Length: 289
Ligand code: NAD
Image 1 (cartoon, rainbow, N blue to C red):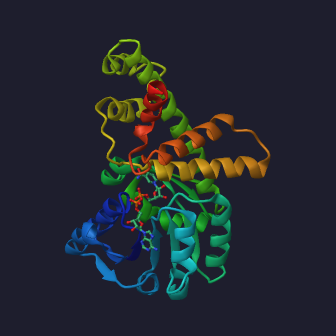
Image 2 (image 1 turned 90 degrees about the horizontal axis):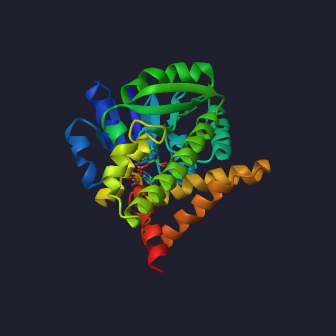
């Protein structure tokens, strides 16, 4: 198929690699030095999002935030201005569920299909084509997207109408964010109490405290391996979406709000571009007061 892909970052690059390897014609926009290898592998660089859309039956977005998706879709020379009749737009970025519904309405009003399909699984999931993908959209649009999503992911779930994929992703980020804070506090306490944090982590694997976060991010915390991965800046954006949803629905998510604030403090100290496992550094700063 002819597939456009916009957003060639930590996640987008390996995802495009899988689409090219599967034999699809992949059209790219904003190919920087770091993504040149995708052109070498057969990707075709074009000079606007509109040009990508007019060359493609399916357009995939993997951009940082809501405003980026809005700009790429509806800005000057955006996807909407070049979209083929009957095309399918799949937004795999993690963005606002509320704005997603608006974007979906505008795209479907043009006669195209829409699926929001944010992911979990991180850079390793993208590299191993093992992403968990949470989808919103009509049954028909989801069925159309499925063969392409299967090239990049393993567990792919249709949750409900457009926006529901992003709701699921916000839920995912609440659990990941609060678990990162819990693992950071536990391992920090272990070290302060004089117990070897890496032995404590090993002891807990397999018990009720086990999780991917304890495995992967716990190890990163112990090794101080904070090259992203998933940047604190992006995770704070996701926790902000959860806080916004709580406000809109008049419900309390107290721990979500607290971790959102702690991520803000990490960003304020200059840690925003580090992996979110670097949240343990907040505790070190607080203790060294
Ligand atoms: P990233 O910052 O590494 O990549 C984003 C890319 O989008 C960059 O290459 C940037 O140049 C490009 N971009 C921005 N504006 C653009 C525009 N107007 N036109 C074309 N390209 C543009 O981010 P990432 O880590 O790859 O994350 C992408 C999305 O996936 C985010 O919404 C993030 O929350 C989500 N996500 C990330 C991870 C992770 O572990 N990194 C995991 C799950 C979900």
